[in-house]
Amino acid sequence: MAGGEYKIGLNEVPVGIVVPEHIFELYAFWIGRHRAYQFLLEGRLMKPQQASDVGMVDVIVPEGQVLEAAERKMKQYLKFDQETWSKSKMNLKKGLIESVSDYDDELIDRVVEHWYQDKTQEILNGFVALLKKK
Image (cartoon, rainbow, N blue to C red; front, side, top):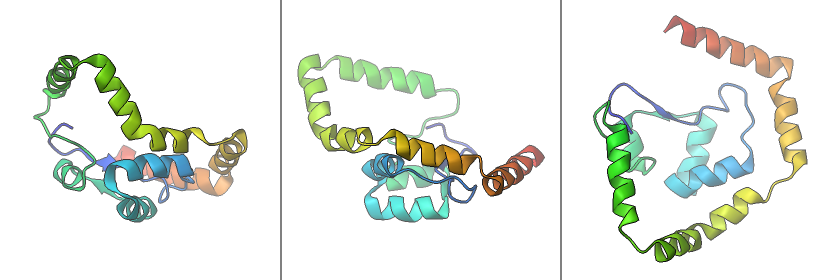
């Protein structure tokens, strides 16, 4: 993540968006279930160092060097035996992949329906107006 005045996190709940379970599972994979539960319900956004401290980001690099840092990491991974690396990665994330793949159209329909409710749109429009002031 780039250092600086950036923030990262999921603020869906405060802006009126229902968080589907598979989004929780992805978030919890990186920062732990208890923290993900708490942070999602609060809509906590974190500055780079905070995000690093909780495990959401692996490294903070100066602004303008994110691409170079990502390319260095990619080159490091490419030095490994690719079959071993990819199979190991799949094994480590098997449960996560299964949990986020196990959702149906009904879930998506409920989230989309909630998105277009007048109350949700009012909250979202208020949030957008605040962002425009910044």
